Length: 386
Image (tube, rainbow, N blue to C red):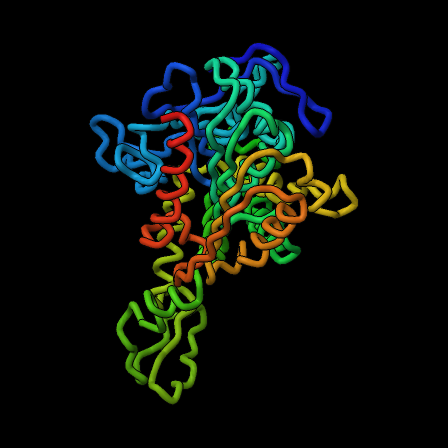
């Protein structure tokens, strides 16, 4: 969908003549009361469910959650997925051309925030003739958008479903994001963010950024269960010359291993490198910088003296929050902060803390307790317009 008009941004900058990519699933009912907006996380897109015709590996990133007969049942709900501004999956972003200069935006693409994304989503819904949403649903960064919807447009939604999210990032989370960003901007192929003009991609930085991210998405238990200390390559004989950067072979360890500075020894190393390689082939480096900054900046309590209870006082929606016990990036404690602030404001809130071993990635997986909570809540929503 094309928007020729100006979109003012939180930074004081503005965008105009921009596009938003979106997909819809199901049918909008006669009184337009069954619409559900799904907000995506860092490396996802508007393609939340189903597969594209002729592309068998094009499954939507939340296909287990959304579709006919699934927890968010598209036989009942009209589901909308919108790709955020600054992304690299169809909406206007750093790889597109500036309407005034004709040059690729690159590093000159303006800073965007969660609040900017919500404002852009609201404009698209206006075009679709949807004045009030049955629900806004999101996990991780998508959950931050759902929370922001309740504050920016409290009368335009009836329910907010916030999964594996937080009211802001901890210092540790910001630190992980900064290390990942530094990996990208120090890549020689980054060229100050204008690498498009040089015909290169900072793949080395993107690989490292993705590897760092993946470590934080998994729990220690899952890593140990899935990979443990399994060696990928054969155990080297103690007498075998070392194939490292030095010509001198190191003394053998007590176990008889020879260590290489280049080879992939452990299964977890192989997994991380595979994820990094794959990510560097499809994701945009400037988009990564923009979206992680939006994560860092999100803090609705900042304007209220750091008091989340005061910030959420204007929310009118009913809430479902879900967290996972082994998610240390967006821990249950952070969800409970939101729950407490809502209860302090006497808002309607349901909370499920799922004992799952999968870490942050649990919000994308098929834990039956999690799926049943989501199914039951959306069945309750559907009864409002049945």
